[in-house]
Length: 176
Image (cartoon, rainbow, N blue to C red):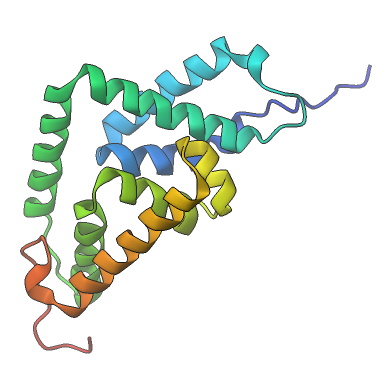
């Protein structure tokens, strides 16, 4: 008997889903919960997936919509996530220059508004095409490009003007 590989291979997409969830929630435990909820929702709606369609984009879209639904229903949870992110950043020591630099980049990225962070994550980290990222977010391509432009400009400003950085770490001396 010959086994047929399913075109609905969710396991191959778990890495992308987890990375995007971490980008949205800023918390590993909440990210795992979000991925779980999104996968349950995808399983329940699997009949709506077109055979031969873009599974990755479909799952990322479901993940994004699940996140939005959670935000609408739990404003208090968002405050807890922000507080946890601040505590995590404050408690991490940077014993080496590259660790401090990575912490600065992370702080700058997390300081972006959610819609800009989501757009830049899908395009720059997940490598989605503009149209795929726009579809995942449920927005027009022009809106995505605008958000990307604003996010990149904000990150450039934080880089060029250290006083505009949101965090508390600063590299003194060294090679950078």
